[in-house]
Image 1 (tube, rainbow, N blue to C red):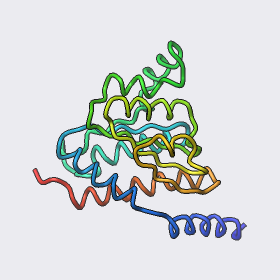
Image 2: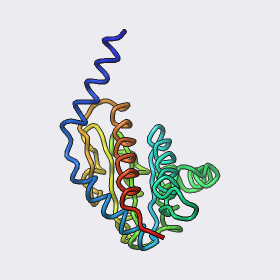
Image 3: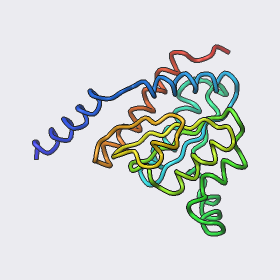
Length: 188
């Protein structure tokens, strides 16, 4: 059993050690600019990636500043089940994120799409809507990157064929951003 766990750790370590971090650097700079300008950061994902979106929105709202009212205006689009089920029922599950962006997003905002495959129709639709609205899109992806790798303004791609490690990398990137943003936070 120890061999299984050390094998997982070795695969994760291999991805960490061989990754291109330039997209994360761009995202960090854009998030800092958005924070200073009072713009919104939206996150979306399905399943475990939805859970990661909610987790990271929390880190960006409070954890980056650790003071009341000082964080980034971040919103996890999968967090409101009433809105998601309404949109899914009335117009289709593939529209649950893009329709929220249509109401809440503004040009200059940021979308961070989290996807293992990069092919989920609701993630693809969110990136397409972001482009149409002048919202810069980032996609944190695993596997081959899918359609999102080509559609996103910036793809942060970890070519690993393991959903759990792909989802681990979403949190790693988010926590890197959180710590860097905290160190570079605007002063009140």
